[in-house]
Image (cartoon, rainbow, N blue to C red; front, side, top):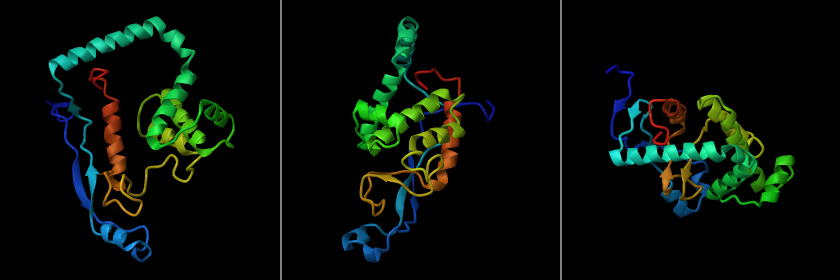
Amino acid sequence: MSSGSPRLSAWPALEWEDRPWVPRTSPDLLPRSAAARHRGPYRAAVVPEVAAIQPQLPGEVLAMAEDTSNAIARFDAEVGAEQALFATVLLRSESASSSRIENLTSGAKSIALAELSSDEKRNATEIVGNVAAMRALDLSDQLDEEAILAMHRALLEHTEPAIAGRWRLEQVWVGGTAYGPHTADYIAPHQDRVPAAITDLARFARRNDIPVLVH
């Protein structure tokens, strides 16, 4: 097998690395307990390279995936044209639902008005950004780094224009506090690793040798 061929492998696990923490706020300005917790190195995630990995699944799972793919194809052939009439409504519903993960909620009227004007409240505008990002993905010829940045730009250009369409330049995390990452539930990969990780993910996404649903 050539070095460029996909390799059979169990899906690799997430790894971690120590990174030095440079406080964003002077420790003198923090509560004493926060300053004590958020000092020294922290552990950031290191995502595995997956571009050349061939996913391995049990035979019964592959069979169910094939049956499901066939059912989706039949459904699309029978009612796909009718569904197209509701594309805008479905996009808004999906964007509103996914935005609840980020604690963003708005009614359908607010979202529709925000699509017509930049004067609506911030939550509705951000959800419209989600709709625009999904449309950008739909219109893209392929999922690559440029397409991902285009989606990011569409998502944030009206609410966070300074960072829209760019790879992040600082550490981010989920949970914990805004003072630092040390008490977070999950610490994302360091910003230096983002471009290479996205390139690897995009290469995996562009492969055509993996069953669609498994992919």
